[in-house]
Amino acid sequence: MSIDVHVHPLMVKELTDKRPSLHQDARELFDLRTNPQPLSTLLDQMKVCRIEHSILLPLDCQKIHGSKMPSNDEVAGLVKQRGKELIGFASVDPDTKRTALIEMKRCKDQLGLRGLKLNPAMQGFDPASPQAMEVYEEAERLDMPILIHTGLTFSNRFSIQHNQPIVYDEIARKHPKLKVCLAHMGWPWVWDAVSVAIRNPNVYLDTAGTYVGTPVEHLRQVTSTLSSRVIENVLGERLMFGSDYPRIEMNKMFDAVASLPIRSETLQAILGENALAFLGEQ
Amino acid sequence: MRGRGGVTVVIERVSVKSERATQLIRIMEQVQRVVEGSGVKNGVVNIFTLHVTTALTINEDDPKLEEDIARFMVKAVPEDDSYAHHHFFRKDGRMAVNAYSHIRASLLGPSLTIPLQDGKVILGSRQVIYLVELDGPQTRGFIIQVMGE
Image 1: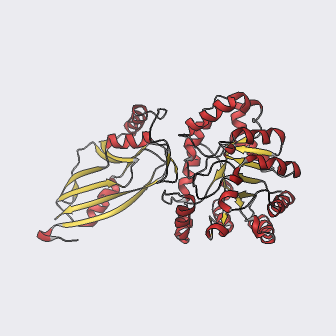
Image 2: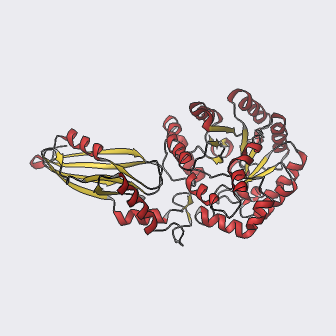
């Protein structure tokens, strides 16, 4: 079983054909200049690296940009179209308060979306605000794991003040049944993210994204900081494979993760078993 | 489009889907279809890729050779090298991580020109036209332009 926990269905042609503004929004907000590709490109990349499932992550940027990228319903539509290969998450804006909580329940119960994606910088909310706390509480109650952006955001239009991983220590401690993934290992605050994961068994990290070169170069930098020993012994049960597609091709990130100097059992855990635990299937 | 002196120019954008990171994709059928549809009997067909990490080439019709060429390109321009291109590329809004794909594409080139006679492309008995995917899998586009009379 292998799972990519970090896929953005941003430049999916089936969606941009129906809603052309999504293409423009992705250009403006994500600075993404690549052209839309059909969903089959994602599926082909999955096939090349034998990834069986991908988690699709929308982002509710209605407040900041007047757009949902894509919307929860659009993600649910893609999942319905492909069946088991795709797993959908939802996204809400905590600052919409009660509306966010209602939407979470609708997404879980009616759309079959399994978790929640948040990005404090790009959505413009404080992850320690009372309204964000209500979202964490509801996610715990609904058994919806949260994958949250931590670390660098390339665009300097957003403050990265709220992307620091350390804030999730308090949240993970308050909500021990809530599973939280600190995406991108919090890069460059990798040790902060690792510290939160070490202390809290409900905190996961993902490998998504590359900030200092190719995926191989990026992971080499991360592992030279952490050492393979930390990955083996400390993060073996908590690190998950994520690509950040389409910011990085899934097969390139897969090759980089597969080349890490770690035991094959640890690699298997990173590629799938830990994601199953994150999703509550183990 | 018929120009002065009875020259016809037909241009069509065609898409193909690659399934591997590096792959030779036969595009003979697409080229012949556009040539036949153009009504041009004698002239040339220009084929031009719209991407900087694909190329066009002509070689022998042999799947094993396709594998060899793909493998050679990977070996000739290694992925694990220090490339200046691998930085945050504002134009794309993402890290540039594929200098080797660009270099491989430059080695092969972005276009082909093939003569036409009696409404058919003139190729040697062993020649096949390929689009070379160097950063797949993706959906790729290329231009087929037929000129002649």
